[in-house]
Length: 283
Figure (cartoon, rainbow, N blue to C red):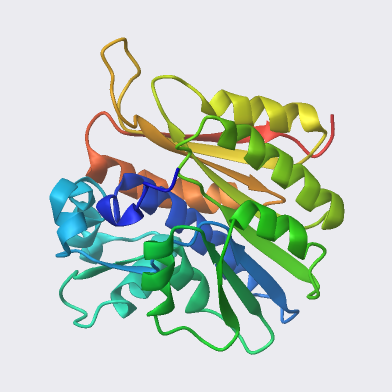
């Protein structure tokens, strides 16, 4: 199925969770000069106008990036302030939130001459929109399956790899497919940093992914979840957002915990954030 278009959900709470985590990881990786290959398996459009028809239909940004933007001058956490500055730089007018940047932007705006970026997108309409985005020469847009594309790329030619995997999970089989792709990737690139986003849904399908990775033998898997509301029999839609980071940079958990402590109260009184090691470095 190719019905999913992220423009309807751009800037929601899951994007905030995902892209703040991504920013924290990439920002740390940039401390070293050695080249990085970034891979975005489900790139989407790259940049989403808040006043676009799709964004306005559901207006999910109102319970995501908007309250953070409105409170931006009060931020005190260093990571959050840096992320805010990057978000502001994506706006034509620094005083007004008009666009929400997707993962291609969060990767692309920090690309150095020695780095590479591969952006996979399988939806024809989304890929066409992505192709209209101004990106650096090191960024390559690829019309194709991102999971298969990542597997075909490893081992990469640069010393380091950082991959973001965030499917729509329209098919339940995607949870297992993601786990298999991650295991294959890390067999070929043992020290690669892999970020995986997953939705928290009433049906709990994400446990297929979590269990498969725990049983795979892959080590150093850090997990964080931003839960917006509790699960109950009447619950519908996405309850929260989950992130896995394999081979996370040192101190990522503390940096994100401090930033999320400022964010969660802005997203509603029922919102809570939790993080832990899903799989440690040793058994």
